[in-house]
Amino acid sequence: SPIFILVALLIKIEDKGPIFYRHKRSGLYGKDFILTKIRSMKVNAENNGATWAKKSDPRITKVGFLIRKTRLDELPQLWSVLIGNMSLIGPRPERPEIDKVLLNKIPYYSLKYTLKPGLSGWAQVNYKYGASIQDAEAKLSYEIFYVRNQSFLLDILIFFKTIKLIINMEGSEPS
Image (cartoon, rainbow, N blue to C red; front, top):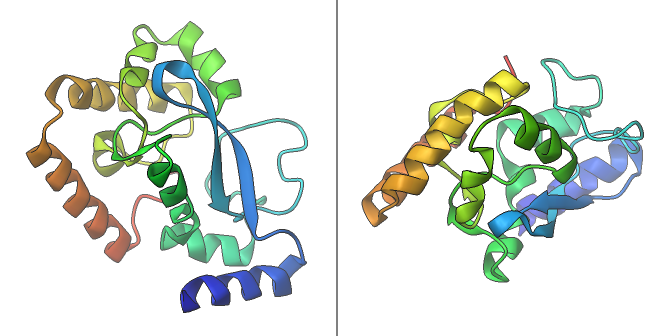
């Protein structure tokens, strides 16, 4: 699409790095899969390992700030939906390195992986951007609610709440 071409061009102009960023995420039953996003961080931003983003994160590029606000960085994840690694709606997948920490710190954390992870989910539309163990614990309560109450109507509600977040450019940055 023309938007992808424009974003790709802006990324290349800003720092000449790759357009896409691929990394592992934990999926259904904790099985790892490769997730692709449009790169929003500087090249080699995670040389010291996976970490949560923070407010005004210096690793995020200028173009990255814009594509995160508009959620354009998430669009390549539709490929993961098409090939069956993800669903449109479900608990968000996490990086395996962070998952190991959360599995040891948060009771019942693994319950979120009884469903396919989603491009959007109940926790994403009801809770701020997660950037700590405490945030992950709070988000898990929403994800467990979704696991227990999953339905077509709840998925439709999440879909429309997601569209509202995108239009209002909310929820894409840690507080």
